[in-house]
Length: 396
Ligand code: C5P
Image (cartoon, rainbow, N blue to C red; front, side):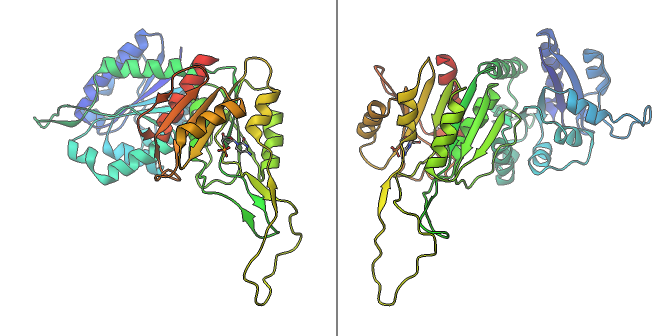
């Protein structure tokens, strides 16, 4: 059972939080409550103190024991933080790291996973500022349970209504279940592009942002796995998570070495990195100079090691290997060939001819030997990562 801190912020849906708290306690979790001043305009702190048999944290400057720092203590105690309901204001504070009251300060000090359950007026929910803040939270790995369409306190039906307490409790339960799925499993994940030097200042690189690999690392860590994230050149922020061990590499040769080392003690490998296919036969030891009247330059390239193939052919036991196939044409034909040639258990095929690099969304097809292809609809890379990790959990 889990230590859950429930944050209640200002909104009419605050009264429903009492049922959420009660049901979480019934499931055996330990629950503590933090409230904002505005939340207390809708429902009293006594309600929650009585339900949890514990004082509600609503003030950073308690006089009872000035030597103790209650919000830091609570942040450390927390194994899961849920914000129910989450007002537009609190979402904005969380997304931007603003800490100016007991609730926003305590949640900023919390490193545990967080679930945010927004409830607000439809125009507030649709406002670009709210959308931006929600997207920032999701990028930070915060889970957002989206509001539903239904009767709002304003008296009309629209999107912005908080889901019913029973659905919230189920969502929290499923989240916690999923967290257990990969406990005691080690997953190696590669992300980003490799860099193959031409000379001391130039290199051969590619457009990979590392988003997919990093989303996979986050999802695997959320499922409780011990993750080795081997990353090359990336253009997104690295995750801060105690379950994610980050290993930086440059070239395909470096990546091969680290993957082989980490895979020895791992249960699965996901090769989401865009590994260069070619490298310089000889890397120049000085900057290549253009000569007067020179219109062409010929570089001699040789093949890089195929990491996926090397690891698959050496693999023993029931370890799972997942590769990616990024193609601009003949997607399934090429992906099928890769499944065969590279010896992977799964290939995630994606068509990169359309707006995929650096984008938050993607559409993929999952190929598996002797099984029907699974065509997944277009969705966020975060969601795809989650589904790939679910698939892996089932196999492991
Ligand atoms: O580049 P290609 O389309 O062959 O990549 C397919 C899969 O193989 C990807 O999962 C990629 O990470 C992996 N790969 C590799 N070593 C290479 C090239 C690709 O492991 N040298």
